Image (cartoon, rainbow, N blue to C red; front, side):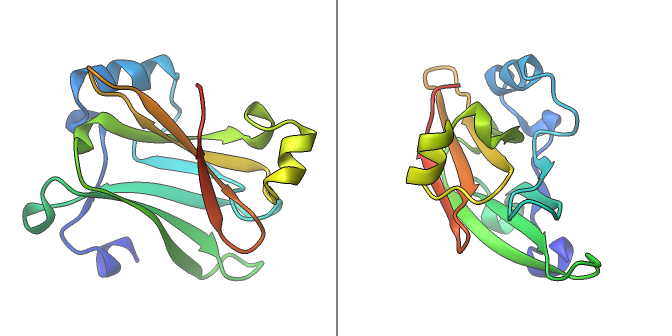
Length: 149
């Protein structure tokens, strides 16, 4: 599915990260690669996959954050949602998953209408800048907020 919809794109890897992003990614003690996160991002039962893809020759310097979520309980088919387009300093970005409770207490969960177990954390770990966005499911779509992490 990834190859069909995003021909010429590839998943962000440790080899494509900048030196500062690679160091920051390692400090997170990652389980997978910097371009893949696995969690219950949509709801509370099914596992979804977030993927940070970077442009190939035709899309150099661009990246997209996309989520693959099961369409049914058998998880035999997935839907794809584009969450964000990144058009600058692509080697500085990586993702990973985190529990909702890491960023939101009960009151914040209600206020932001968080309707999932896990969040997607997008890091911008450049040498002169640092930013973190958390993406979370509201029951109808994804929303994102800047966070300290």
